[in-house]
Length: 285
Ligand SMILES: Cc1cc2nc3c(=O)[nH]c(=O)nc-3n(C[C@H](O)[C@H](O)[C@H](O)COP(=O)(O)OP(=O)(O)OC[C@H]3O[C@@H](n4cnc5c(N)ncnc54)[C@H](O)[C@@H]3O)c2cc1C
Image (cartoon, rainbow, N blue to C red; front, side):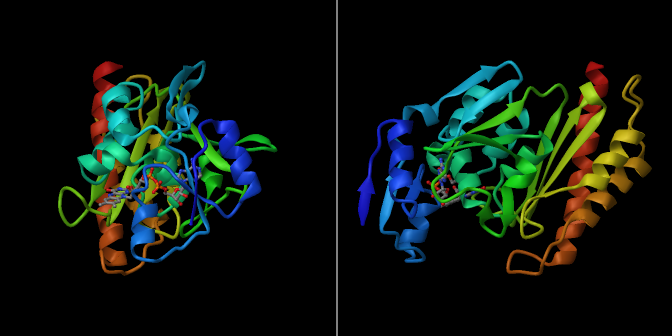
């Protein structure tokens, strides 16, 4: 197996263009598992760990540009205040070892519906920046996921960064698993309040072939919440929001849980996270 080791983004894009079947490897926490189990035997690996451009994050006029190779440990340590929802999701990923290696670019590259960053990226209106020798393009997160472990990347493209708009309201992430740590989500949920537009973002994980945006639930909550002079959230609004989130999911029965359990758990996660986020918003409004 060839092991390509570019030291700049330009070199990495040249290598991907010359060998589109080369498999990128960032933290390796998904790729190495696949190699170890012989699920994949690529002709070449494209090591991205020496590409400094991918490991940077910067503040932009509209928010944060997060390099695809920034690890979960760094998001938690450096970006908890700017990207609270993503930091919450990052804290639930794997173990300290996995968080030291694993990256959001890798989570997107793998595109598993169970990946923990996806619900938050959907709820916060993230954009995925991808590049090739042909140029750079930005893909709205809702158009990135194309099926189970499939995404909108062309064979010669790499994920270079994730753009996250500056959050103006509280964000939440919640995950159900069979235990508290080192667990693949049975289902998960990300929520963001966007008071600048009186909007709510709601993303569902591990309950469908791709991560899903709960559009009806978002609309319902945006209309029902008293943005200008916040009143306590009523039980009926919280419950209806939970029901609409559960209705947006398309889960299956599998070894981790039944479809019915996932729908029920999602309605609970949605209700709780909306209650927590709204309390935070009302306190600061
Ligand atoms: C023990 C264990 C526990 C885990 N727990 C969790 C968990 O709790 N939650 C969770 O979401 N995940 C979990 N994972 C899965 C994994 O850690 C995450 O998906 C992680 O984000 C992968 O990042 P990485 O940098 O290691 O990716 P890699 O393994 O390097 O790559 C993953 C995929 O993305 C592609 N890729 C990587 N970077 C790029 C790029 N810049 N451009 C294009 N393609 C790219 C690779 O080719 C590959 O297909 C766990 C894995 C292990 C082994």
